[in-house]
View 1 (spheres, one colour):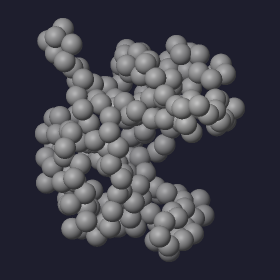
View 2 (cartoon, helix red, strand yellow):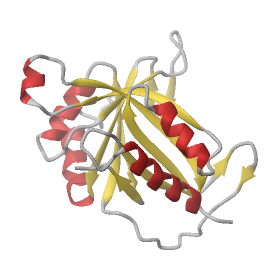
View 3 (spheres, helix red, strand yellow):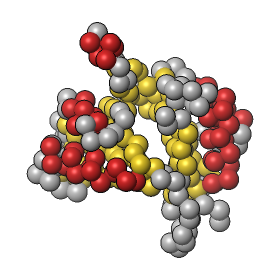
Length: 213
């Protein structure tokens, strides 16, 4: 069976529906829209404290050929070649389960990847902006903050021995492979990620990306 790709498009607020429409017109049946905020590196906007911008993250899954073609069209029609118009990247999947059960596993076959990696950091609510600022000091160029919740307001569970509470923030940073380790190490040490209940970091390889400037 053909491989599958997870496509993530990060666009300005209220543009997610347009991305979904383009994707459906090019063979992707549906997707999920999440809400977050991005950071704009501009001294004047930072001085005025209006450098945050609302974002929508559109997640799409399709067979690789369809996904990559749709992502290319989305990038072109949404103007991702221009700064601040949006970003799209894709990550290869080994399994995909949905309305039908697709048991796909590529058997570890090598595949040419881009030089971009996606760094995901999950932390308690309120420090995501500090995480991005720390990452920026060692070469990152901003990121996207996604609000998240745990299992429930009055419930606790664990993931990798870390307590999952209702109020969390997920930070998504795209970096070149040569910068990933120093960014991860900086976040890890600055925010004591190795201590219990402080956070989780994971990195995923990106097969293709658009809109990075």
